[in-house]
Image (cartoon, rainbow, N blue to C red; front, side, top):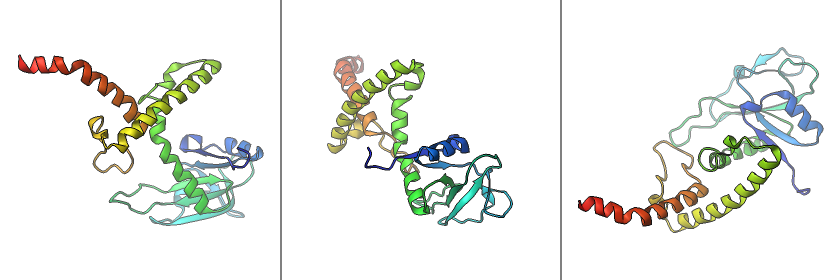
Length: 214
């Protein structure tokens, strides 16, 4: 890992400057999305809410060395602002306001955009798969659970990939929703529930045929 630059990404639940300041002192990079009513100040100017920045879809701005929020005792950070263009008939309702210690807007936007590629994985670890949040395990037991989940997820993911490559996923789940840009289900979900589907098919087929014939 020493050959890679670690970047911590967070959505608006992690908008506080305390975490960002701590990460910066540890020598780590970060990109955190901010709420639109968060205030910032450029050098020798007054504080203003982020949503007052004039912006249109497709625009991007970069403000180096700004004060974010009016809390004292924290250093400056960089601010990247980006509003995605309309894509496939869908327009993002508001821009991304991103606090960061990266040095350019393109890299910041690209890295934060990668966050949406793991949305399906969040669901896999939560209600869509192993319900990790409901375990309420102690730290030591949680580590063991995560290790087991990693092994099980790998197995399910490989099976899901095999199902997708053979174009059989439509038997397991509805592949997409109308007006949905992101994948409905991950390869993991397809592999996990595909296994359940096979068990149900083999175990219930005779019963279903018997009920239909009655």
